[in-house]
Amino acid sequence: MGWLLIALVLLPAGAALAAYAHRSPPLRSVWLLAAAAGHLAGVGALWTRPALSSLGGWLATDGLGLIVLTLVSVLFFATALYAIGFLRTEKARGGRVFVSCLLGFLAAASLVALSHHMALVWVGMESVTLSLAPLVYHRHDRRSLEAVWKYLVLSSVGIALALFGTFFLAAAQTTGRPLVIEDLVAGAGSLQPALLRAAFVFLLVGYGTKMGLAPLHAWKPDTYGEAPGLVAGLMAGALTSCAFVALARITEVTMAAGLGSFIQPVLVAFGLVSLAVAAVFMLGQTDLKRLLAYSSVEHMGLLVLGLGFGGVGAYGSALHVVNNGVTKGLLFLTASNVALASDPSQPSSSRGLLRRLPISGVLLLLGLFAVTGSPPFGPFVSMFTIFRSAIDGGHPWIAGVMVALLAVVFVGMGVTVLPMLYDPAPAAEPRVREPALLVGGPIALAVALVVLGLYLPAPLQHLLAEAARALGGRSP
Figure (cartoon, rainbow, N blue to C red):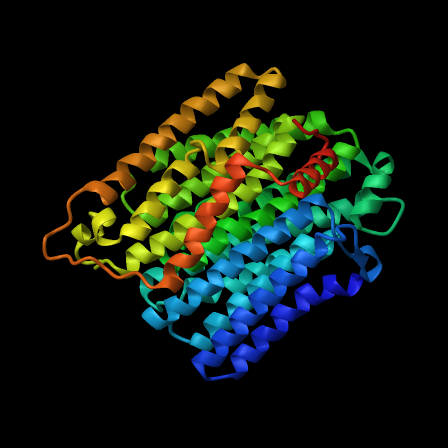
């Protein structure tokens, strides 16, 4: 079934070309939904045979890769359903480009999740960046132009640094197939330590820029703020997860080479800085999507903290990739519903959401508690696991700082979101009818968050344990 790995990349790529060739919006919607459903079915088939490889080991499945691939596929399917309703409500300029770029993103993200060759990972990450850029610029105004320009410039700097890191990694290798993960790990003892350290630093900064780790996060607030909600959801939930996979690959190699004492303090430092920057900028933030952008910075910090702590922290990071991706998808799709029903010139029109948009209002409230790590939602489990790893690793003061910063984040989120939900809306603002296509996906994601908070299926636990072992950690 090695052909299935290639098909998961080529299917959405071919659908992107087909959607661009058709001028009929209904046909483009058919291509979008069919490719999303076909991709999800293919990923489901992989769960029955999770150890596959193709193209001489360049494409392969492992615990973390299959987890992220599944997240991308599920999140994209929910987004595809939403996009059909979105394009009926708000006509995006260049509808052919809009749908084709969405499908191109799915192909590129699949390539990153399946790649076991570090150069192919780099190609996939650059393709992910380029596929989303036209979608950020969908309004064709000055602010969206500024946002996409900042996104492309900073992403280009990041990908250039990642390329240097890939060169250093290739130079450090003396045996095995060049840049293939399995051979790098198997021959980790023969890698040249100085070059491997340089590779890790460049790849951390490069892919850390893609993740939006502070202080490399400057593109996030503007980009997420100006992009359509469904696009921002894919960026916050799927793009950052792909960047984390790329960072996890080099972490796996360096841990196998016995350089944990070098990389772990660096990861912890980036994680704490990201948490602190997010907490500071979330206080007083009034724009919902920009608030969620800083929340994404916070959660990227939590991901690298788990890697830095090691032990059960690696397990917590792998689980938090899933929880964060689902949560961000829920919140950004809901934020898009709020934007569609509000008048930008009348800030009061985004108040009283529980009355005006009862379904989206409830979803936004659930998302607020989920993203801040409250039970019984999935992020609570993964965030607690990362917190536990700090205690187990003998870092109680870091655990205390984490708790303090997360409390600040909770306040910052609540001060902005709760008035939107509970403050009375102007009497002239009518209750809005919410189409099923615009709320079906977010409802499914909310249900998934509750399930992940209460129960982890055995196959998922197995993949999480496999990912943790590869990253030098262990299961709880």
